[in-house]
Image (cartoon, rainbow, N blue to C red; front, side, top):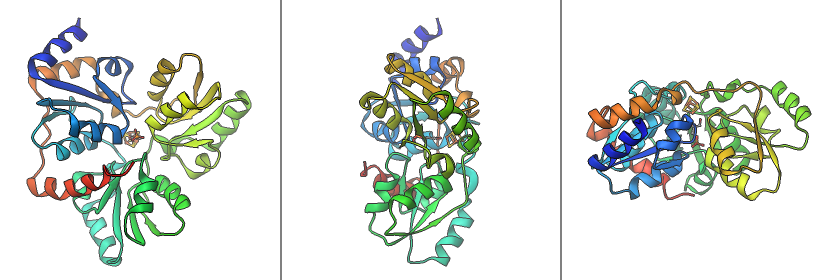
Amino acid sequence: MLVNKIKELKKEKDAVILAHNYQLPEVQEAADYLGDSLELAKLSKKLTNKVVICCGVMFMAETIKILSPEKKVLLPVLTAGCPLADQITPEQLIELKEKNPEAKVVSYVNSTAKIKALTDVCCTSANAVSVVKNFPAKKIIFVPDRNLGWWVKTNVPEKEIILWNGGCPVHEDFNIDEVFIAKKKYPKAKIMAHPECHKEILQQADFITSTSGMLRIAKQDDAKSYIIATEEGMIYRLKKENPDKEFYSLGINKICKDMKKITLENLYNSLKTENFPIDMPSGIVSAARLSLENMVQYV
Ligand code: 13P
Ligand code: SF4
């Protein structure tokens, strides 16, 4: 069986498998660790294995490599990207910085390594509010996600925040009608939304949080059912870890095609052939590391 072969190869190569919460169920089952972007980034720094296989998308693999340059970091499918990360170019960010020389740049970790290299501090959906609130700057340029940026702005009204107009095509696909229909169908369910959703959705949510934040809330909160506004892969882990509760995807299932490119087969091939190693120019790595090291200090 492929799962057993993966286990054997992992041992042989001193490899560890990290998977994001949106991965296919069988990939989640094969992983050593699951997490949101912040957890995976923090964890990768602590692990001592020679090889890290990132079951996620390119920005996650790049983040692991930047934080642990001594490790071999593999992404099983090179085209597993994040369309949100590509929505601002280095030239556009440089122009924004030149127009606002007094501002500090906070970049969502869903960004390219080149953007991170031009950034003062990165953040994820789990710590964006805390980063912007506590980073010593009155004026912030926040890129590239406008929805996460709106949520941060709402929670940190004391700072001037310039937003970039990017968005995740998966989360922006949720619409307010789906919320009203779901509320009618499941009147007792609480709504948990990822901050990449439109503000109209966020305004209706009981909880706005990262993917692992949803898991923590499901365990601690006393509601018995939840409507989930994020990528459909999240439902698998929520149900598995909370068998006594109900979880419903909001509206039509929203699928991130890039996250779903990783399969057990290509994970196995990745281990076997050690493909595809992530590498970046050393100048980019050292500049981007500063902004990521700044990020991991914040909860
Ligand atoms: P989390 O960091 O909340 O897991 O989100 C990552 C992501 O890509 C959401 O679309
Ligand atoms: Fe990127 Fe959106 Fe997919 Fe997350 S769900 S990886 S933000 S495209």
